[in-house]
Image (cartoon, rainbow, N blue to C red; front, side):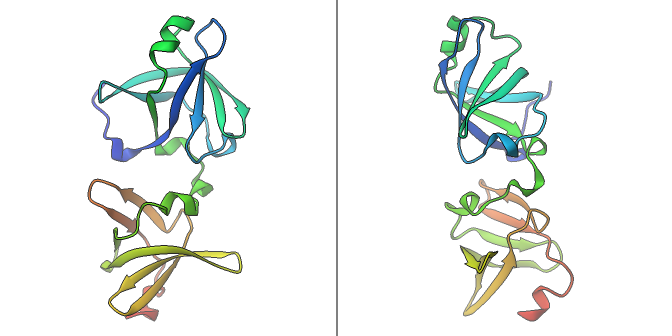
Length: 177
């Protein structure tokens, strides 16, 4: 299996203690719930700084912010314990499209916002809620640009380049130019 680009993944959470003797492990979810996750087949566990692929045999909700997960090659409490405190990543395709929340943007102020058609449109400032219409605020000089916080508009967040890729509908940015 070729190496995985972690930019195509999202950190799902951190492995906790083993649960039982068959190799189940508690996975503490970062900012997701069980409902956000579609059929997961593969996860990448960071071991010695490298993403190591593990096939998922089963997973189930334990609490609102934890899962019980069983990997196909982890079949004992001893093996499960060795993975305790490791970070877990999954490919973005395993998340529901609408699982993007304002929590995803908490650490992003200052990221460059790049539109597919217009290019660089400014710097991300914050998430604003206008009577349940949630938008991201982008600063372009003295101009505030508001983009709806919808999964279809936000296409990628690249933490290495500190960029947020967007694909705004035709005419939306014309209001600001």
